Length: 74
Image (cartoon, rainbow, N blue to C red; front, side, top):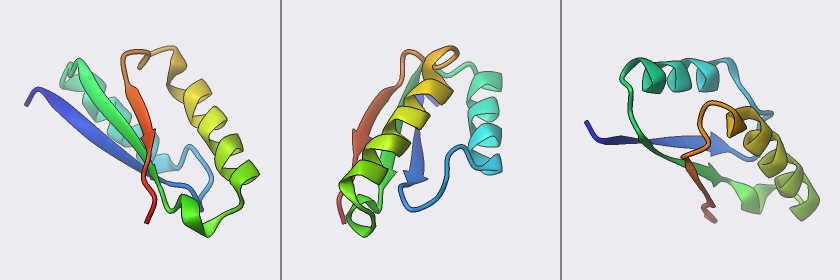
C-alpha cells in the first residue's frame, strides 16, 4: 500500500479515538502519503468547519506534515 485516505466528519469533534488509532496504523505501516478529507461540512456553520479544520491541522502538524488536507461537500 502506498498511501491512505482519512475521512473526518465535520459534525464531530476531532480527534476522535478512532482517528488517533487510524493514524497510528498509518505510522506503523510507514505510509508516506496520506490525504485527510473533511466531509459533512454542509451540516455545520462555516466558522465551525474552519475551527475543526484548524484543530485537525494542529493534530496532524507534527507527525503528519506530509498529509494533504481537503474538504468534501455533500
